[in-house]
Amino acid sequence: MLCNQGKIDRALRIIAGGALIVWAVMSGNVFGYAGIILVITGAVGFCPLYALLGIDSGCKLKNE
Image (cartoon, rainbow, N blue to C red):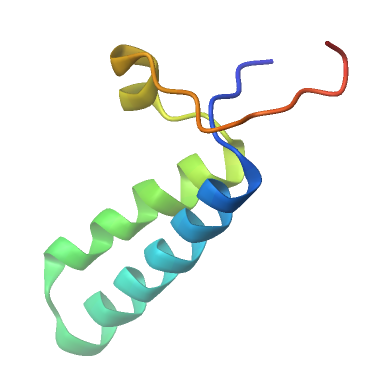
């Protein structure tokens, strides 16, 4: 399983993504829907951009 985000990173992504989605719905600003990407990557624990840049924010897999 691919994983390159730690618990704090994942939680912050989900919170920030949710806030952006709420902002988009309330204001009608379509750029806020980018929060969907944050929520998905936070829920899955994998960020393709992190993989390209070689970043790992502290993912701990149970089966390692």
